[in-house]
Length: 457
Length: 112
Image (cartoon, each protein chain N blue to C red):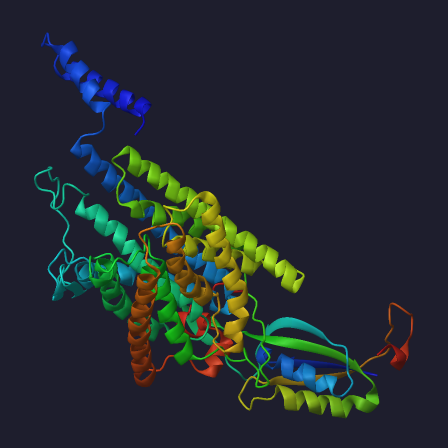
């Protein structure tokens, strides 16, 4: 913190000391020492407090991204499927919270207690056990990791990342998936698939040991969500009437551009917590400056992506496509997520811009491959996520292109294959799709029983 | 001249439009409506309260045609809109007394 703030703290400490020790004649001397020591930096207690606060605050912002996903998806599906989309979003978020606590957290952060592997030779499978927070009202001596932050703040922050990964999948598969197989898949994704691959990097596993860099999760969160969505989309098939036999595509415009835009802005804001709090530290001059830097770069990435998409659609289609601009901003955010700290603002903007370009070209490409991605989650999260992971090398000298690529491939194969197997089992056992009649009627009526836009009945 | 009103399932609109195009019928008006015939509605539950939903979404397609064409047009709509399941809809044919093209003032079958 800067000198002004430390002076303020010093004055507050002085005031409280004077109130607390009115009888001592040494008040003035003690107070002076306190003020001096505070202006040199903060005590270990305050470092712990500030680190924890960063993650508490960041966790709240990342949770807010759930609202962003919900609104974005609600706006991009047709009216008859809006309730279903909202139901999927709130359900998957809750499932993530429960299963990350039950299994995921320790699987992802075994703290050295690997089931398969070790910190030295490379960790592959983390620890099994429910997540346990520190007791109520700990002191510095009770803390699990006094040099870092409160376990509660760490868990709170990380559970939101797990939920974010799951919410990426719901957008792609919208309008033609039954709720039950989707929720079952979410259980497996949040309990096993996400935590296992995340442990390889953030849990100190073998990818981390190789020097893989992914600051806030272009690969670990976004591409993972994208791979899971891709596997699902392939097995699920497109919406009825989306693709014609002759290869032409039928547009199915979303029901609410205001909701889609609102969702995008909410995601943009939540991303400040997603990237900013991933610094995991705010107790020093350098750390808090880094947090600010990360947030500024995150913003720059979004802006770059949005403008790139705006310009590109204007050039290609002669008219600017709002949904592409929204997707572009998100792709820009995903692109800087792997390294939002080291680039300058210009570089961050350009990295985000490339994300926006990727989206504009990838969306029609998916349609040509007959992969029906209702909201563009695969281009935004998977493809921009891969780009973001590679782009680390442009600003971070510690990054190794080979290691980044290898990690992309390893995480990609693991996630895609695991997801594919789960989707396949669900398809074969309970089926993924509603009947054609139900799909035409709309999932709000068919499965949810609450219409988003009911009229006279 | 006749005015043809067809109540169809919303998912059949594109097929009906293409069928009419191939008969050289190039104008129609479509309205979103709700209705029921023999197709029953269903019941839903909202916050613990069950309620009946009687009306189902349909599309009303209105076309003005030359009397000579009416059988061909009605038949084309019927074939295009049919799914074989209850709720396919109905076609009504009314006499149309006059038609006027606003841009040019043409009347009668010239305006169709």
